[in-house]
Image (cartoon, rainbow, N blue to C red; front, side, top):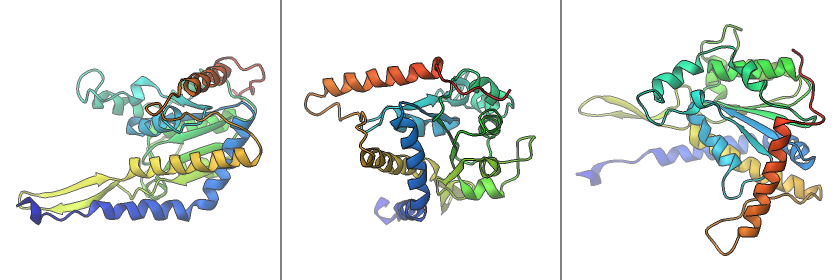
Length: 272
């Protein structure tokens, strides 16, 4: 009977909670860096690959979202929801292993003098994620680089990138680098099932951990902007009451900021 089945995954939510509490000081530092960018009319650019795209969506276009978070989502690296076929998992994983993509992605963006790059990847070992972080360090050594990934796997797993580095090492070598742990254990899966038909590993934690970090940073960033006396657009709940005025003004501010990513009059010159 199904009543006999035990549920253990909710215990992992304590892991997520404790991970956030452990990193509170770091999260406050990153929120201050975000506030420097957003408060000056700039952007926090967010790269992700694979399923880490959900973190970008949660940050950039969600109720409660602050303006100024700019997605860097390449279709080849993030489109796999067809599962099979030309936009399936096999193709996405192929593109994740291609070096040189970071340079090409950065060539499509103008970075302002207070802008930030956030690199999100579950493991901290994906070649494309390491690649863009390395290239950003090279081209924009004075700008902040933030990474959100598994500290455990990024430090301990075998390196895949030809540089001999995982994301952890790249961020630690950056002049203004911040590595936020998503709380994911090595391998991500948190629940083992020893059943009658076999042994199964299920319940990845990386997305839940990353989303929890995202919302913690949202809270701290708007509080820091407010502490500085800066009023900042935040998207209200679109399903309650009349929020059309907020919706329009929020999108207008996004258009103004996103335009700077395409053509910034004071763009930082990359070291190429």
